Length: 632
Image (cartoon, rainbow, N blue to C red; front, side, top):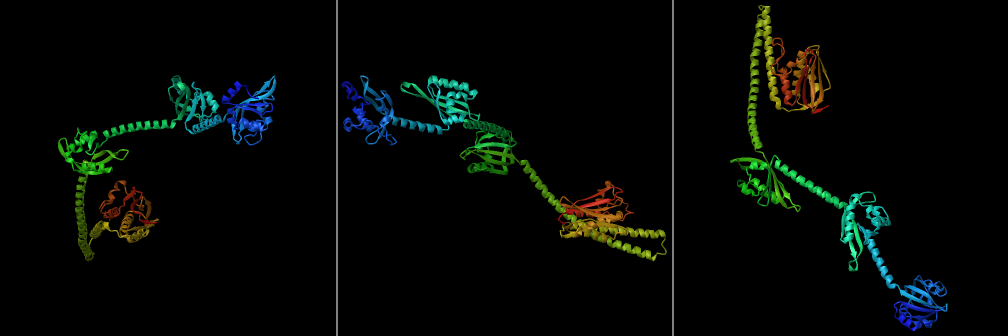
């Protein structure tokens, strides 16, 4: 079965493969395109004398046999139906290739006599489609990896693609986002401006760019930058919009923080400028190697007297300071890039037309650029001329005080020596008077009247009182001389108190009660004198019971000697510590008024204090403190 001549001409020039089969499914015609496609010639097919199916369609791509009865091409004739579709043919070399086919039965007088088939090789199309799919997959993968939201829309602005990543960001599916568009996630306050900008781009084809807030899946709105450009085809026809939405929340936050920091820095700069201008110190800024005066506050102008100094070099304004320590400090700060500090630096200034030597404390602080270079020098100076003058006056007075103290020390030493010598010289005639009075009384005992005997008794009492007074003066002098003595050992205060009481020879009936007293590292001789005088005072003026107590107090030990005597009125609490002061009449009291002053002098020489607590009729308590270098 062959096509007619005209049909044959058409078939031979066709780019599609044209095949004719007889009623037995054997090939009777192949055009040139079919021969090239099948890899066999018509002569080879006719020579094999077998169904065409067994030549080009006998095996499935997976290698399994493909029965002819299952082939839709071969069913067109018996079923008298047009069959079309795609399938896979195989060449003699075993190569499979995709095809699109149409198979129609050939009828003569209503009787099927053969089949005509059109075949188109799909290899190039499938290859191009695979490449296109590969490219699309690559770009789709790239779009999914981008942090921005990638999208496309048709020329009318309707979304036709968004990445899965984009849909997940908003917590919706891709189809839902394509259906709803961006309006469902744009912040209501940004919607109108966004629609206006997008409409303008759709109408004009101009690039689309807008910033708006989009609602994330968690409900949080974040700022985004949306950009889109139009893809155009032949003749400039708009084909599609390609766009991205980029999250710029962090960038806007950084910009906001930068703006806030800039504003804060500007405020701080203004505040600092105001502070510098109002600071109670001379402040100036110098620029360049010549130290041009770029800024100075009113105090700087007032102290320096240079009111027209701005923009002028330091040396021009202060020629008298060239080579001075203050001028060298500026050079050192610029060269080293480190702060230079000056204390009490002499600076010669002309103030109100009068030359004056002033003294300044200053700091020259380099102001550095971001690269570490010195941009300027900020000098902060305080006039300490008054302090220097005051210090010099203090030093002068201290020297004078030292001289006077030395003179006083020599005077005290002379007085101590005089008191010591005078007391010894006075004792000799007193002893003579006492001895002479005794001899006279013994020789004239029978001739003396009762009144005369009383006079002799009064004389001996006065002599004894004078001797006690001299002994007190010696004790006071000794306490003065021993102020520097520091021979110490461990001393039990309780033992010292008892020993002193025994030495006094207290009258019968007077009891001593010693409380818990510590053991100190101290001078035993001095402490014994303290106890002797305090206990003597208690026995002499107190009652029948004397107590010695102690307690620690702020790094010292406070010791108290307490009696149950007549007490002392508060008005006399200070007087009793003064030398030669007594509260009773001289005629009635054997006290010299030296004991308590000796106690005070000894205690204060060791950094302690004395005090008395008493009132009339309530006894007296004398307390003294001693350094607590003690053992419990």
